[in-house]
Length: 123
Length: 253
Image 1: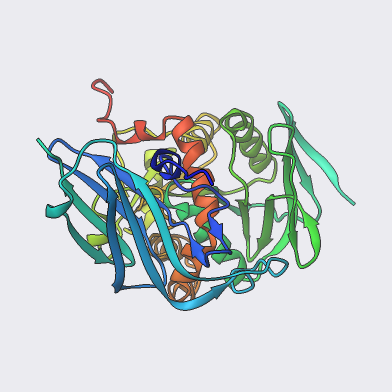
Image 2: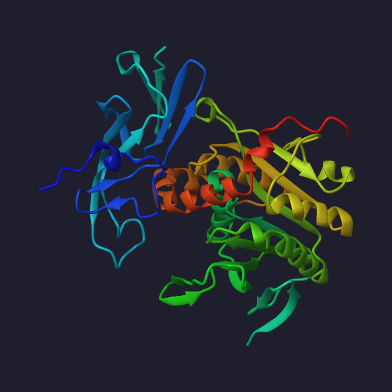
């Protein structure tokens, strides 16, 4: 079995319209990356999420993984797509960092359902 | 039972119901934070407006939307209570914006519209730290300021990219009074709170009683349901250099 390279798994572009992974019960959230002189600021839109359930992982040097459980089970039916089957209990995104960052000094805040992560750039 | 009343560079406005004369035309097109689309859609549902027409063009993607099992055009016109509300449930391609601005203003003038009120967003970097988003207004003529009833702050300088920019200019050229309300919002996240702030301003300007609380109560659901629409709108905004709006205003006026 061929193992996928990290490169091909990492999503470099914003999530697309079919970002609903029913097999994994995961929704791909909308996110934004901003590269400033000293840091990279990542924001992720997470409706139906409590701050406590947000988890960040940095599996490789140049990517960040965001995972968050939703406060309730969300079905396609709830969202108006009655012909589609699938339910969602989490968000998941793997986001490529455009420049090297120091993940140990990352700070995050969560307000109005929006996650904001500040990742200092490595010199 | 439909009449093609206006054809402007391939843009067709098809009427399927009666359009009142002297109405206020409210535009809710997909844009920054989907503010206009969310606000206008809420006006339609809260005031129970009837569907009275559609906008069609070869330049729109070949698609329909199903509502209640019926095939509909994604770009439609609703009416009731002296209002005409135009919404698009699909992204408006950049190539359609000029014919749309010309066609819509010509049509509104043919209907003796008294005001064109366009609803949009104005992205701010620290949006999540703002409790009550501020509403700004760009006017087709300076004399319209009293009509704002203090609900919005006047935009004096700057760029407006996209349909609302061209609509405002065309209105100014043809003498149709127009107000473009731009509410502080997220750039590429659906922003129902900003739509609520826009509606509060619309209520004041038009003396309406649209219930904003329902929109805010459903905020999380709306954000999730409009995620895909927001993503497609974001892609189109990038194509038309929407970020130009955040440049400094031109030096000489």
